[in-house]
Length: 476
Ligand SMILES: Cc1cc2nc3c(=O)[nH]c(=O)nc-3n(C[C@H](O)[C@H](O)[C@H](O)COP(=O)(O)OP(=O)(O)OC[C@H]3O[C@@H](n4cnc5c(N)ncnc54)[C@H](O)[C@@H]3O)c2cc1C
Image (cartoon, rainbow, N blue to C red; front, top):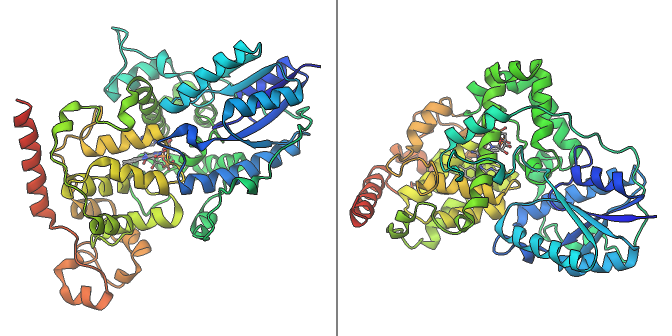
């Protein structure tokens, strides 16, 4: 009776999981395994919020497996050692997994594939995470794309919904001795700061499908108009589920097209087409990280290597992290992040602009904080988001485009509902003072809300001067 190991990493689902499907098609027994080896993803090993999510996602997956006659075997890395031990203990002759595209994971997986084959074990990997893998999309000259619009045009022309693979009804698994209990991995925080995340999220495949159902029932029609309004439930909130592979983009595409009434109708539907474009940004970020792996640490635009960043002032950085900058829309976003592990995309851009431009702090300081606090922390998306915001990435917002938090608040949170939700000490204030409380010192004294960490107009001028200095140095 042939046995295969299904090495689950960031494909924590049973439906439309090609690795699971292929293993079941070729083997009588399939052993699902999770190997905890965060050091293999260094320097971007999962942060605290991601570990919280992972714990609950693995618990949900184990329950789903048990309902089908299998269990999730949990062990610690190094991954190759753990796989070889499991192979010896189970008699497995093949390992199946879904591909990851981050530089450290890619290098590890390549090494493991070679080592397994050298031991006479078959190693099969497949794509569960993307519509197209990074090497499947190229410019006319065969080069990677660096600009989103032509990338998306090329992808869009090839985009076709395919029927997702069903979740298997039964998985003949059987147990291998030596599984750890999930709690042994110590993924949950010792000090329970996770109440807000528990109230907000339902990690796991069923949670992902529930959010997609809600989004298709309620929000997709108005997505284009509402997606930039942070107080509205205008986006899908699928990002952590996508990151952990509890749902895949092929499943989403298929549901979107079914909802629209076919492929052509799908692209013609304004809300659906715009939502697909956002999934396109996710594809683009993976394309970039795969082809330019150094960008997780370094500027894609090397001109920015000479940019005069400021050494971050610890106290100012802490005020930004904890939502005490004295700029309400920024503090609202940073508090939403701290409380729920997620922040609205529009506000992510605003807080990133303040940090990298007004405060002239290197984008990596922001990326690292997001990495630790986001439940959807994703190396490709986070790198793209930060480099885009800082002006040094592919197809980035030009450095001289500095978001005014005041103008952004007035445009996207005009009544101040989002600020009121997250900055309760200003709840009684009305716009425009709710947006610019520093204009009323009595309000600051009454509310205990801090004065701004930086003068927005002066720091904007300083940032532009620093940018000109960099350009002049580069002879631009
Ligand atoms: C500074 C900064 C850092 C970011 N860090 C991350 C991160 O670590 N992880 C992450 O998933 N996203 C990141 N984003 C992108 C974006 O903010 C989130 O994907 C989005 O807010 C998730 O909410 P949603 O699922 O409701 O999005 P929706 O609007 O419902 O979009 C659907 C999906 O499309 C993808 N998507 C949407 N916008 C983007 C984008 N701009 N770039 C890449 N993919 C996108 C996400 O997978 C998202 O779940 C970052 C953006 C910025 C500006």
